[in-house]
Length: 605
Image (tube, rainbow, N blue to C red; front, side):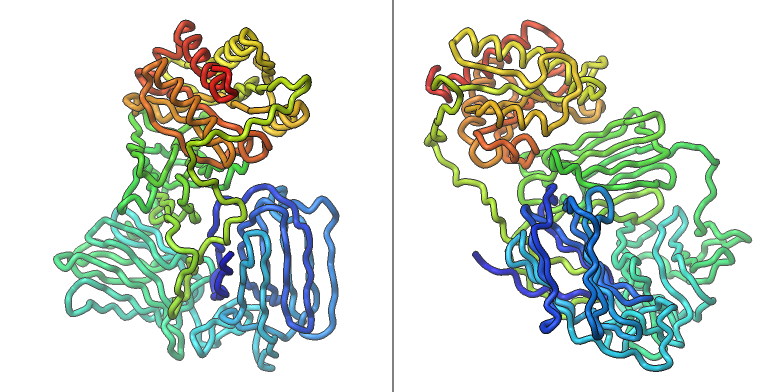
């Protein structure tokens, strides 16, 4: 197993990009005072994030998806490292905090993370240094003479903090804190770059460094910190050579206004954040894959307020947009076999909350969502290429780093069946059939109000009946329209010592894409051959469009110890599938095909 290279922490928070974190526990941690090294181990893959914060100086390490199961712990030490605290930051995140003694700081460029495996991490801290006697650590301004900002050491000449960039219909608005700065605007000789230097400017810790624009002749905006005294924050516009010149002014509402030459600035510049009627809902107008499928872009007609997070049970990234509604004709992207997105769902969860659910394809990482403009959200999609990434001269920005080594690699493809070990009682195989959703959770809702929970319950019941007619023991996790969480489904299979586990679901996309229909079957590790056999049986029996057998880290597949699959029997939003799934006769045909595939896998077909 190859080890990761050391990873450097910059003045911004460092996101250690990895596959979606799964629920796990912190098994152990310790701080070696002699080596200034923190080490921790979890029982499942973890995706740490780290940030160095001032006042007081401390290194904060969050472990998403990790639970402690015990009260917070504080270990105190003497010297420059005052303490290490361990606690539960929220329901799904454990937090380690290394706190320095008053008057000390560390160089963030010398903080090194090392992923020995995806479950074992070390953090090497440099030797803490005393702040100068006249330093005022309470300001929280970041600066440094070498270009590697030292936290807690303000620059007396820094007057303006750059907090972020907003793209508006007329130009660009730069949010700032502090005094009114001197601005220097220049255009490059090839006319492809316009730079705005903010004298005495410092980039805030959370300020985005790269913002996609694609309007007004501007491709993107980048922020950088220029090594100078006094410091200079540089705003660079990458523009078309034929685009007009730009000018920069300060706004009476706090911030900088960047406008193409010839634009009229009134008493309230058009660049200032627009005022919208209170209570008005933003309308989501489109969701598209852009920039060679490296971004998923969500566009609306008004500013968007959102939250994000991973649904660790399904491996799905969730974007919740508040005070928003889906447009009637909203369009989603066409998902091809090579798409970085395996599945995308748009859902009007409540009358004023819209949700976008994204399941990335295998080998695709989702980084944090950014907001290029008030009305636009852009989700970065990155395919894994190499386990090691070279980091020459990293800028002051989030550093892309490689995945931790996988500790649970997928098995090589094989035409040989998985070993059949009937583990149920009386030497007979036992099959668990799991109809998804139920009760207050309808699952996907499709054409004509077709509900996933009703379709899969009917199919699941018929699969059980068909298996029992052939003398195979079968159990169903949800025999009726009841609410059942994921963990009880898994535990039922484990307690019953099941031979195989088959979860049945129905797919969906937004209703504007009724042309998309077809069968998808998912597996994780040992379920590959079971998935292939069931999939082939259903395609042959029903003639449904074949969308392939795929790997996914769904909870019920990862947490069951026997061969397990998840069958998406069609799209309730698809014109072809919905009409068929609404028919009881077709559902019987689907159930018979699934049962036939299971019997073949068990050697009884």
